[in-house]
Image 1 (tube, rainbow, N blue to C red):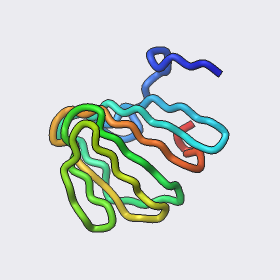
Image 2: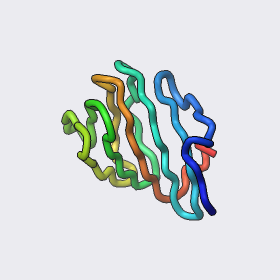
Image 3: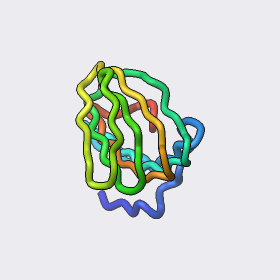
Image 4: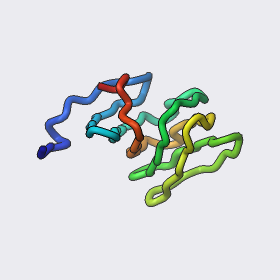
Amino acid sequence: MDIKLSEIKSKEIMPGYHGKMVHGENMSMAFWEVEEGAVVPEHSHMHEQIMQVLEGRFEFTVGGVTKVYSPDELVVIPAHTPHGGKALTPCRLLDVFSPVREEYK
């Protein structure tokens, strides 16, 4: 299956988080455009997650440890680990989830 990211309709999943979602059989990818100051409240889920900052600066707390991430930095979030964050600037983020995030379909 070939996909053009430019042809995927963006969804505002939560205030300030505009995502384009791609789903495979066992994983999901979310390409985020995040407004400055937008917050994702602390939460956890059954999915293993890898987050990469593509542009901007993103403050992210994983398992009680807070760091500021910049382009080219990634963080691996184990399943069921509390995490949340805030865009310090406008950001572009990439999240990869396994298994598939059914609620993002």
